[in-house]
Image (cartoon, rainbow, N blue to C red):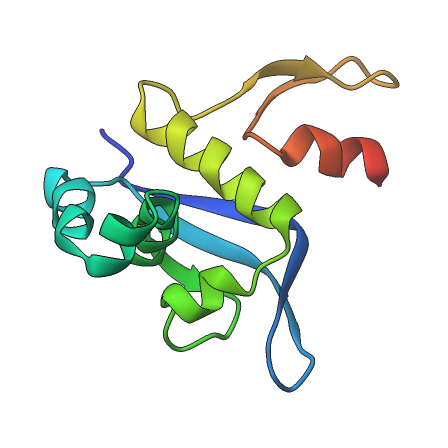
Length: 124
């Protein structure tokens, strides 16, 4: 069965206006329209880098308790989180949904990790 939604954990977290940090979320697989529609947007025509912002705002379906994940939310993320989300997007949409197989150094149990999770494990 094809997984169309993938959970993620941001390395830093999005901080909303009230100061709440939102780190966990869900990203769905992108459709052709998710990549085509933003090309008509004036913000992308003025700055191609904005394409990433729009696409991520379309495919992130959940981010903590944020009600509406829009371009404003993505614009205000830390660069570490934006980089993580770009890598995560590529990973789930370009043929695989995991970074690879890793083993616990203590018990030698093997498990798969998503992009960015390895750094979170190392920092923990």
